Length: 118
Image 1 (tube, rainbow, N blue to C red):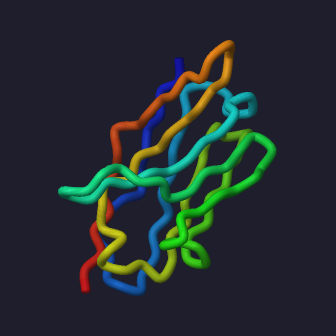
Image 2 (cartoon, rainbow, N blue to C red):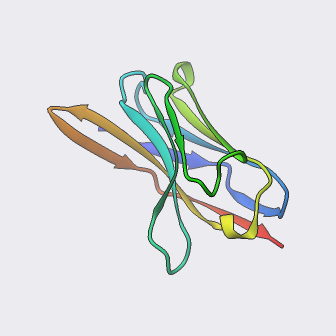
């Protein structure tokens, strides 16, 4: 079982920056992959960025060059640094963890709202 708690969302003007944090209730060293997803009103949840326990990263095309995902195993925390924010980045951002033990176990945080004004 993994509990995930996001923080760092808020209201920011276009062109600004925010850093989201996702604190896990247990060591993330052995969690196979962690990531950030987002869901805007009326849209499906979509992948933003993922990072594996080998530090391989993957980004949605829409955020490449603007967002950076990282993990701090000592703090059991994953971060999403978001720069050059655009109004279309407005969404609820969710932290995700995938743990492979016999099968894949998936966990979600409660979400944090990011609003980018134009």
